[in-house]
Length: 356
Image 1 (cartoon, rainbow, N blue to C red):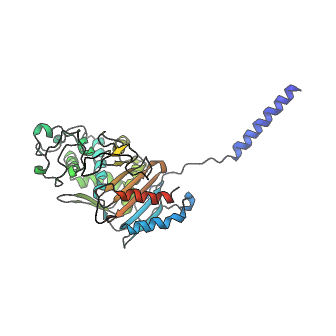
Image 2: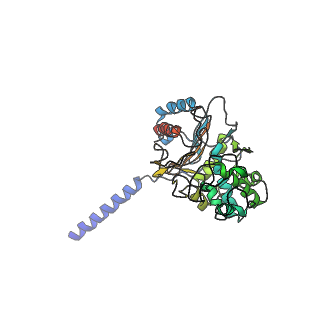
Image 3: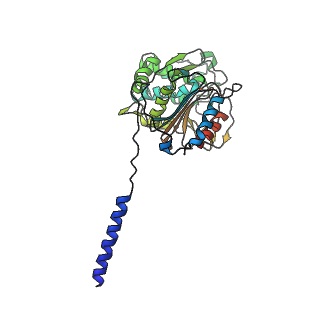
């Protein structure tokens, strides 16, 4: 009798487990979507399907309009969940990325390294003519390509016109973080290493591969990329997907990881021309002050961002499979910051009210 009861109990438990397994819903992760070459065709996903707070959407739109925005896009798993244009701007209009375009230069440098054309730990003078700065030669020779990527070349950051006479010594390379236009020399490094104009190399290795539009403007002070907001979103999607576009590894994953993680301990919130959230402290352009806390407290800690003057932004949030784009005039016309500003935290409070 005892044996019979044991067998009955075992069958009962087994049956209950099978029923529980049968009723369990297995969630299949949504695959990453990539738009085709036609920029007008892009899959969408509704906010309702993501269980977002629809009651807070209008407040976000109003804030964007009030803050002089021209375009705003949110992608989730590559699909457009929100796309808004303001003040007559459209999906086909181009706008300047400003310093957010530094990330395109970083990507081009990484591709050139992957192709064996350069090595970022080599000194810059290996690719430019010796004497490309006005520093003493022994100090110039300390500057590697990596120092240009990390803003630690030791040059005088108060001079933004990158002519030889303005590239002067302040500190040994690697000992001081200072935000400046010194990154522009990377376009010369890539051009010389690839033996072709930088834009030609960029177009072939990056722009055409992910279907971007746009063009470079190489001015006397600023090197600026111009494109549509959707092209900016494409590049953000490439970064979100670890450098891979569909089945093509456009940008080496290890290099992208280096771009989007702390590159030096002077300013832990800076990678290779990307800004990083969630670090213990940060520095900002035009200062040597160190600020405690996260770069954008109201944004996800794992977010990394391309940031340009007048609040041009690519926010990439891996934990949410999300990319957020903002283009436009400065949110505060009296204070067009070079990079992070109070606008970022205020914007993310609005976004967080919508995104669950």
